[in-house]
Image (cartoon, protein in one colour):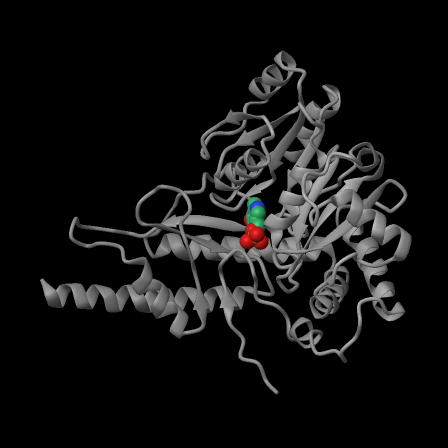
Length: 376
Ligand SMILES: *Cc1c(COP(=O)(O)O)cnc(C)c1O
C-alpha cells in the first residue's frame, strides 16, 4: 500500500515519514502486556533525552491527549491552593494557559507584552519580587501564534534566582530548538508527539523535575489529568492507568528513533534551511514577514499577503483550497492582523518541498492577477 505524501505547512500535526506512518500497523496488543510496558519505558526515558536530562532527576509522564491536555494536566496539578500563577503573555497560546488556570479558579497574574517586542526581564522580575505569592511562572517557549521564540534560559534564571517554579509550554519548540531542562531551570515542561518530534497526534506529555513533582502530590484538581497519579501508576506498574493510544505509541517510538538517528543538531539545521528558503521565496513574491526577524524561532513565520489595491482582497480560503488541491496545507492566522496567515517548517520536509510550495504559490499569484485583470 502506498500512501500519498502531503506537505503540511501548518504547525502540527506535521508531515511524517513513511516509517512513522507504517509504525501504526502493529498486531493488536493489550496495553498491559509486557511488550507494551517495555515500550513505554524506553519512550519515557528517551523523551527526557531530547531535553538533555535523565531519569535520575526528571521523569516523563505521557497522557492520551493533544498538547492542550498536557498543559491542562500540568496547570491543574501543580499550583498549590491559594497560590498564584504568573503567566508571561505575548501571544494566543499564553492566553490559553490563563484560560485553563481560570477554569480551575487558580489566581492568575498576567505579565503582558506585545508579540513584536522582546520580553523585558526587569518587568518580569519586578512583578515577581513584589508578589511572593506568585510561586509559579508559566512561559510559552515558542509562540506558535506569531513565530516568536521567547528567551527560555533567561526567564529560567530569573525563576531560579527568585525561587519560583518554572512551567514551560514547549509544544512547538520541543525537538526543534535547543532545550536543556536542567540548564534552563525548567521544573515542568509540556510537549506533544506531533510537532518537531514528527510523531502522530494523540499523545502529549509532561516532563517533570522529580522533587518538584513529589511536592505537588496532593494539588490535582482533575481526576484523569492528575500528573502525580499518572506518574505513580507508571512507576509502580509500568502502565498508563487508562487505555493509552497503543498504535500512536509505536509511532512515537519510531519518531524518537528517527530523531536520534538524524541527530538534534541536524534536525535543527534542516528546519533552519527550510525556513531561510521559505522566507526568501516569500519575500521574492512580495509577501511581508510579520514575525519580527530578531525574535523569530526559525520554525514558523506569519506572513502578510501582498494586497495592492483596496478591492484586491486577500481570500485565505481561495488560497488554501488552491494549494490543498496541489498537496500543500497552509494555516490561518491567530494574530489580529489583516491579510495574514502562518507557515511552519516543522516536520519531515526538505528544501525541495519548500521550493515546490513556492512554485505553486507563484502559480497562484499569477493566475490570480490574470483573473483580477480580466474582471476590471
Ligand atoms: C500546538 C500547541 C499547543 C497544543 O495544541 P493542541 O491542538 O492541543 O495539540 C499548545 N501550545 C502551543 C504553543 C502549541 O504550538
